Image (tube, rainbow, N blue to C red; front, side, top):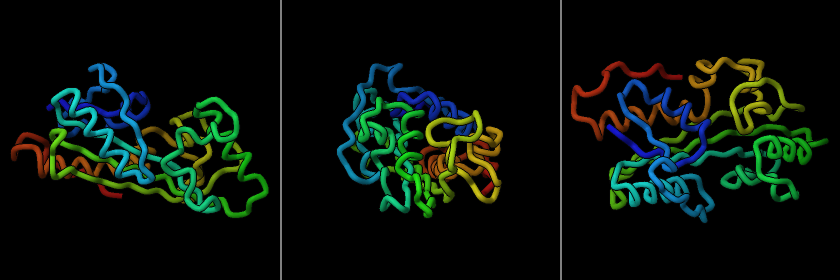
Length: 212
């Protein structure tokens, strides 16, 4: 089964390909099929993800899946949220992962409350007019580290400190991160939803992924 990934983020593609391997699903990045990026005008992850998935399905005629993810910082009232990818541009920086991390650390300087949540919302549609999109949400709670730590992952992984491991996501081995990340959790939910709702019985592995 081929599904269009409504994202041009290579990091997301790599993570989701690994996580969806048990389904025998082939994920194709939308750029490879000439799909333009969809506008993301909404203030919630689920609305933006649905818009992106429908856009990819409309341009390709294939099932599509979209991920809208972000960092929600308690001291900022849940910001940057849906604006996570562009957070640094508020402060005059060019858009990049490194500048986003830099901006967050600067804005949290002197702030005692460093609690934060990483959220991943996955939405999948069989077609642009699918009245029953599949929706899965994964959340991970942690703290924003004082400085970047680790070389793995992407985005805010170097500063997303997970107390249960005593490390940032960027310091964890890839398999451990995938098992416990916000995207890992939403992907496992989505994996089950696709298996139960889209695939004929017996066409995919019946082994359920380990829960966390």
